[in-house]
Image (tube, rainbow, N blue to C red):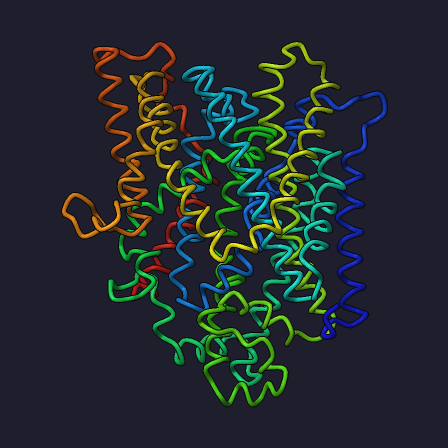
Length: 550
């Protein structure tokens, strides 16, 4: 165990674990005379209030990837990485206003179920199998690996034990209780996540300013590294290939965000579990506001660590502890764990609980959504069409357990491949633009046909690979283009959409498809609270980009 952690830190962490497990198991219990049915297990009985939805959306989204990875990116390149969070706030508003009314009106359990209602059973099954594979082999595996890596770095827990511990913690309440247990514990997880993150940010900035507080720390960091506060990177910046300047605002970042927040089962599932559409939209709005402050928790500490490491006076003030596990440009992901050692006793436990909360809540969400898709779209469709509620719920639990076991076996293997996680994430972007084009046209263009959607989805793969992989020695040929991968995603989505439009028009001769969704302006009418809140979020975003443009 890490010698920096004292008895009080361990006690706080143990209390956090007991609280989460206790609440999870308490809300999971079967009420007297009532046995859990599919709606109870997979959609929390459609009873979630707006504040539980908002908290659960953030808890499902924020994981070790943000705490460790985004702090590392803050250390390496600065505030520009915050575009992922701030653009997500705007994306959430679009999802709440334009996607949710359709999803909730259709009474969906899963996103593949929408594909069946709008297109066909064949396309639904193809996407269901794809998403199950993606959740098990990419999402669950990578969260377990990065989470266990964080435990190993901070507390010295061996990788295998870390993977097993996180898996058992998430399974202890989510497998039995379903979405209800996941969503209600997420409310507590978000409190730990935000408070623990803010403590770390405050301490980092206070240390930078020599004990003069938060605002003095912000000024010191800004004056010491003004280049780290540019939101729009110049072409000369070595990180331009990952965050391509103005393309971040108008290009592929929209593909990544709309796909993730609008058509990702483990995100959208909690909005489908709302008491009503209005309640769901209020939850989305809360999540958008929280997204505005996430960079303060996960990016600013990384920038502060960069200033601390490059200032000999601060390092001298930190003494011997400051020189231990010092983050470097090549090991930027060490920035957040390095900062944690400077937290006072007690707060270390809170910050570590925040990190664990981020990891465990994401795991629990992914497990529940994997089991939902398998049970509702595979098991009930092909294995047992007349399954009872008891059989459905039990299948959900068993399939989640199997998915977790597979992910536990795979997670330690990622450590043997240096850039495995980044490689997988980038190549997931090969598939997402085509799926996004299918969904957007399926939702909002009544002429879109099933055959055109399948052709578009399949053709999107070679289009994406054209942008990504040039034959050896051909990279400088005019036949191939060399553009940042976010731009590649944008181009792929647009070209796939064009293919779907062409084939739809050829097939139906311009007539509406029989499964097209009839929409009207009234359908997208939102409450005054949602409209005012959305306007405030947009004003804050405009102000942030105006201040930190370059």
